[in-house]
Image (cartoon, rainbow over all chains, first blue to last red):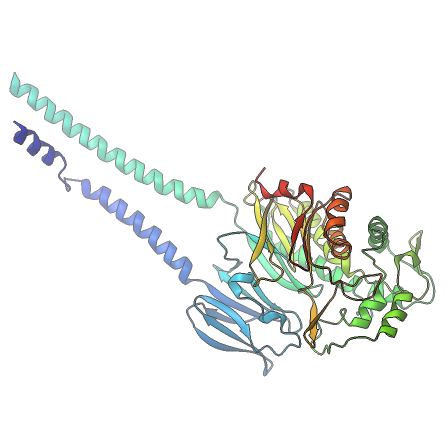
Length: 138
Length: 351
């Protein structure tokens, strides 16, 4: 008797029945879309460099290394991209305030004397990436 | 009888399974649509970053009207105010006032900004002073953003001479006519950024009363409206001696403004000594007792002036004074001791 009950239950729990594949397909599509959207969002993060209000450079956060930022043939600074973050190094400005902090720490890297603004961009919009707060003052 | 009953049971079971399948499909689709509509119903934020008033200005806005029009209008206003109240621009209103030997007739807006500055100077007993133009120019902090700026320390005699030509008591404003006595020079840098934030918020609200977002001008922040229309913006306060992005406190705002003055914002270092832009109006030298003050206030212009005043006055006195003047503050002294006014804790919770 226990053996009979067991076989019926197993039969009831059989994984693939007719038309059940539709449910699995839907779930598969749902999971796939979620994963793809998440991956696309992280891969689509761009470092956008503007000089004098004009967009001059766009780098993917995957383009690790030192990138020279120039305007009218004059070297303004170098942008270091590493570990999914960016930082200004070797700026030609007098006080080097723009070399403090990284792009993700600061939300934006700005060199006021040379009018350079560097922001992270996702889907064409400037974004700030912090899990802990929306904005920072000071 | 037994067979019939078993057959009916199987049929019921089949119907039940079909129903289950339909329910599963329905639930899955419902889930998909819920996710889709959840993300669609969240207001979409547009943003733009620009440079004005010697700093970076970021405007983030969500509106049912065209947000790009509001963004552009706010940034245009920042540039207009920058041009009009600049100390170094020879076409500005402030340049005209500072370099005129005669009384100067000013427009209503200029009169308002000067009048409010004098009121804030009186309220803080001169700790905030809009008539320190000679001192600020002597130190070079009005030109610190210029690519050719070369820092230098003025002599004691030069500082003394500039101090004698300072002080808001020498500003005369009557019937929109300004007279600067005793050779003083205006420098409204301590309020103009705040004023521009207030104007930006007003413009956004005039164009769309339901707009949400914020204006971030050199990390002085004015809230246009709650996050996603109803939530708080979480705002960290920079650790004045930490890496950029490291913070000492976190507050939550749905409205109002938050402004910080720090000795790390505009400074130069000579022989290992830091010389920053917040000058003590009594001594003529950069303030040494404080390294950071943050003020929350309904208006950015007030918050801007009060954060400078609190920086000069020090933590203990400011903790008592600020609530009287309609603000709350967080102060860090030179020993990195953090103190807050009594009402500051109100903003540390989502009320």
